[in-house]
Image (cartoon, rainbow, N blue to C red; front, side, top):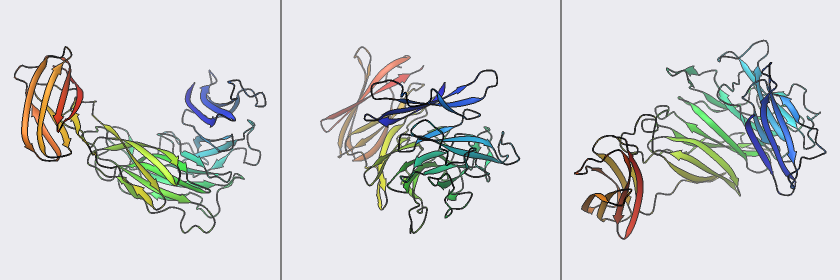
Length: 387
């Protein structure tokens, strides 16, 4: 079993879904179970309600009414899609709250776009509050495979499906192009934001190198707002920046909030030094977004410390941020509490700074603690020395 999904509340129980294969044919099945608040399976549901999903790239989203939407990648009309860029489609099905496939929907599901591809992952979806759904997915018709055989230069498209299982006639058959900027637009996430409205957040690599290495890559976080309500001025707002700090801001996740949503992402703006290949330092940043509201992450108000780890060699870099000007003291301790280095610097300005520490005695491989003291405050960080 794989690709676990869970959604629900304490009053009605939870909907649990997972993928499994049927054995020799290697056909993947998406199973659904409704678990009651007492922890027992809902006897009103069919035992092991399921839909075939052909391969392990399906995705699930709650319909907000106890059921679920399921996206399934499959071949487009008269073609196959593996590997891309052969045309492919993504089909969406609706599982009702009683565990039965929605009879109002086409048996084969709703076809989002003949050129969709879930080569990386299935589309992100959310309920629209009126029985239908919004879906956002990768569009590779203008994409390419890079030197690492990763698909890049992908765009994002969005589609609105009505409660009766038809595509919104006010929207193009292939959906709206949400973002088609140079570079790769990846990892879209979506949450509802009121009746027939939604918020989409994604990782956008137009500003630099695709961030395989967080120390070298450049990526930003962007947001757009969808509105399929009658009389809406536009189905998609002009995309807006959530974060464009130096370094890579990647893998955003979004959660609904009153009047908007909260976005959290992995952020390498404080990456320092030259980490060992395959490793990096990163933090978590957050912002609040909404129609007419975009609250960017606030700067760190207090003392901050960031060290490269793991490190090789006799020296390593320390980055810090000071709330006020003044003296700083940096110390390095081993796990026994012995001070291996002590260095003081006076007259340091407020804001970001960086120092290179060079202990008089070469540090052996192991774990150490770096301590920063300034204006009565102290910050520590663990550093691993490899050799």
